[in-house]
Amino acid sequence: QKIGNNNSIMSFVVLLLLSGILSPIKAWPSVPWPCSEFAYNSSTFILEKDGVYLFRGPSPVGKNHSAFENSTLFECFSTLAPSFPRYDAGLFIISLLAPQYVESEAADLLIELDWTSNYTQRSRLIHWALYGDDPNTDPETLPQREREKLAKSLASWQPDNLVRRVPILSRILNTVRITDFAHFKAVALYIHCTGGIDRTGEIVGALMMRDFGWTYHRTVAWNTAIGSRQQGPREHLALKWYCFYLFYQLDYELNCEDDPSDSAFF
Image (tube, rainbow, N blue to C red; front, side, top):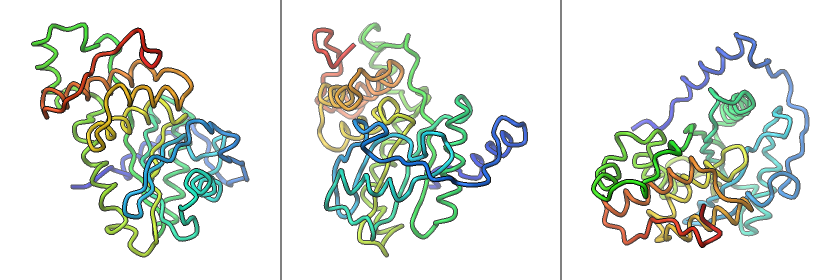
């Protein structure tokens, strides 16, 4: 199964360039992006598994959207995880940017694609644009029977398709060092949106519930703590629907209801 489609993404970006929405990038000026300056609280080391270091965070492109800061990104990884071998590690990026809606995200994605295509021995990139769910589709507002039906059929209607993507993410985490980066001591698996909070929290939170036994409450509280604010409503609902999918379809023992008295929830 082929994961992602870089050709279609590049074709879309080329159309943006031809239409004048984006300007061609002729040079990559130095734009610092140290952990201490850009969205530090959302840059997070999650776990290490068989040489794969899982991180989540903001876009690794400079703040003026003109440069991929590889060396600074790896410095950030070493700061967050001191055991990370920054000089003997590959980089696997899962980019959640939505270029068709945000011009700056289209520019960032182009830079990511350009960099990874020039360093194929050291890097890979998958692009999964995430949008969250309709804020008017809160499962708690539905009758139990309707909620269960929709949760079990989540793969057929959820825009972000977490039912399909989370198992792929799990497989990448468990196999990527052997399949793609056996010539390195380790690999950084970096998942990001623009700020590293909302969309990133959606899919990483879903992974933590599915594979690592996290409760819904712990996952939402984690996202709140990382962002120093509540997760965006669309992404929160996508995560919530995935929780109900795990509960109804896969028989996970989860309480997927929000508690208004808890500051972690809406």
